Image 1 (tube, rainbow, N blue to C red):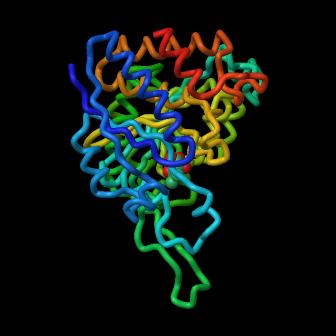
Image 2: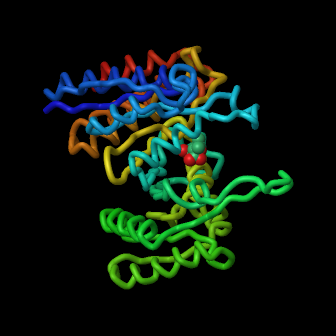
Image 3: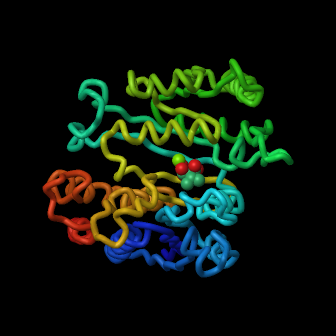
Length: 351
Ligand code: IPM
Ligand code: MG
């Protein structure tokens, strides 16, 4: 079959890691008799430079016309250090999520046995951990209006707003995911303080009644932040609003000791998008030292969503092989002499 894939390399290490993932996809296509037709689009700081828009219309069109989107990273320190900048690369990411209707971000948190020693947690706590965080992605305080400064500039405010519909579709996805896993759902909120969280809790309780086969529990976000470190093995599926999810998923991703390996999927109304979670890592850009595994595993996740399960598994197995053989970048082994492209080559030849 033929698949149209939108490829958005973005900023920092984005182009280098995407190049490796595309290499792997091309080879996977050759082996399995599928064709991947790649169409490239600009996003982030590079799109501000070329189009004065971090998510240009042209990129949006490419995404909409594709079967799925493979995305690298966004972010550039030139903008981080300029709070007065009118256009920011991150706005491109938010606009892309909103315009593509990508209302849920799914981040698996899984431990690779060969990397367990790298976890900041004790081996007995992290061993066997396997959960998934489902974060709301197009609502809440990152999008709510009104927002801004008061006239005298002395106060600033944001709005956290959720509709019943936005919450309900998240719970639907969360229950669907839990049903395919260990049948446990943790709803994370701050219902003891926030009214938006109380609406989440109210709808979650209604939905829980419709899913008696799933064990549902409720946790305040501050406690959840602790439990992810104290007893990560107790989680199966976690569902939460946008900002809580942003914070908890960064926390969750580092406990496995392999931030550079974590893929994610953003799904919703239109084309789904796949990206590594580690960001643009500008200090490493252009040096051939960035770890491409998170992007390669995102490509694998993408194939899984496209229904190409065997092909997805083939890539995952080759990634495991590279970890076991110690063919990894220096973030995973500081004595490593392998560069970004060596990892891609190794995986390609082990598919
Ligand atoms: C993420 C990132 C983004 C977010 C930023 C870059 C806007 O941190 O995908 O988690 O906060 O959503
Ligand atoms: Mg984040």
